[in-house]
Length: 381
Image (cartoon, rainbow, N blue to C red; front, top):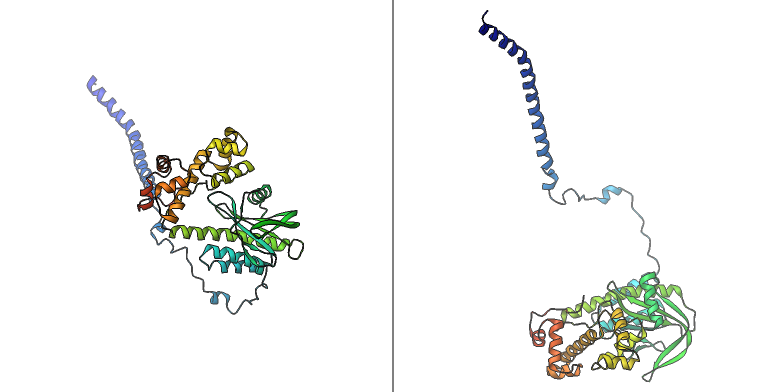
């Protein structure tokens, strides 16, 4: 056998040995292909959204219940509602107030309903004024149980008033009872102390913040405080607060003129010093910071620091905002000369007024008052 034939035989043997190995490898490739196809199919299924997404959004969530079929012959027995009084009286009172449009009518009727439906003897209703954060009187009850006009009364918050608001907002105590407190009456244009006895302070707080205060006492009969009635009055005041805000919003939307508020929505004077400062700036808008501090018997630095902490604005910013608010009110009432209104509001010159106005509102006075593109509310947020 020559070398060439021997080499051919060796190659044939190698091919016979390798053939099974190649067959196994080919089978492995065939098996791997279906696995890849299964994986691909799983991926396709995973990315396809469920068919429920293509159905009507409420088709499967709404199921009509036919109560006569469900109940069959069983019929529940109706019971009469609880007797009038308590929460029922509060709800009926608020329902009545909701029918009125004029806010002052609502406030007067609220005082009468507190007397007639809830049973409080003597009350006084006070609201915060957006210009000065003083509590301004609305309506109250006189010595003979009659409704009295108390719009001429205004006062700054005292320690007991602040305590009542603090407890209501932090601890949930909706009314504060004061013992041996001076009970007052309005006679001949003066506030006089009638006697000492219990007084209840009930904050009027809406979802937005503090709205006002209700005071009540038992001066007519000298009866002790009735906690049940005071609780009903607190519920009444909570609902009244939101009704007041609603009516104010409706009045603001119907008004032809924009609203500009000097104060921060949540600002309230906590200290006597800041309360007096706000009152002075309202009465004397031309006062400069140094003059204001001198009248209050303090330094400019102390006044500025305390005022900023409580009111959210510096003394100068608040004063300018208050002057602008006064200016807009004067123009609203008289429609007179802009220069005269600016000077009457406390600005030293028209140039100063124009600069402050444009800086705070972002437009000129005439554009703001006459143009339809003016913003509806430029108060701070």
